Length: 369
Image (cartoon, rainbow, N blue to C red):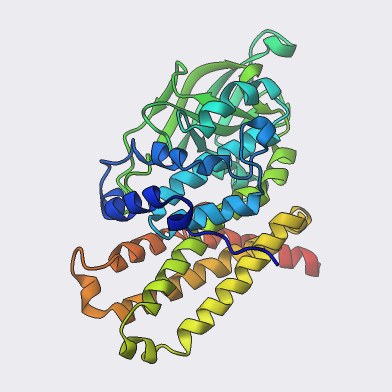
């Protein structure tokens, strides 16, 4: 029988205490934007699911999802940063560019460098939801000496840490070559990071826009020259790790309900256990699909889990509002208001629930035809 997954308080008690102390400020202000990544790294969280031969702690992607869930139970903004970092690490694990992985993976695992997953646009491109927003024009050279001029913009990327980052982005090629994916170093001439976006929550997540204007990179920075095939391979981890945020937030809301007064618990004695049971079922479906690779051939099943988890988070947080009552409307009395703001983000993180529902509708139409 599989041992229960340790909570963050069991795995990393100092980190759990730090998140609980600062969760409200992390959500509402940008003051802690520089501190989240080092705090997560000290707990060795980025090494989970990474082979020991590459500097990790071994384990599986499912264990990394559980780790993100454990952080999300304390602070969704911090889990969002965790997701961006760990997903970029996943890209390097799958990249055929061994030199790129060898050069940058150690500083990503240690939290010295931020990894930003700018492939949300690319994931929508993979599902035929929108074209790629970045373009690469080849310059002279071939093989290892190949260079490209890069142009375009991405309006929303998380974990663009001002202290230093690598951002992944997919590019169309003006010469007709297949789309590819580059790692964009923060100090590239022609790369411009905007000010942090004026978010209503998750404000310490280093979320900003990127613009490339005549930036030049060579093949040393190319994660893959086959964006479509690469995206298909990493999509289960991309979305699976993302679902960890929903799982953790739902668990915390249900725990808050369980800790409410006896009268409040009695009022929701049918609804709360039903949500907890549904969460367990959805989590198992997610973990099984990621562990056994079934989402590679059946991405629609993964989309369905992501959609169902978003609906469950919304229901769990609404139920927490009911059981917390007026206390939840007082600042500093509970995390209920913050979790309500956090839950509002779950449906819109890319790919959004609307985009996934449209994709599922297209899938059903194609299957029926």
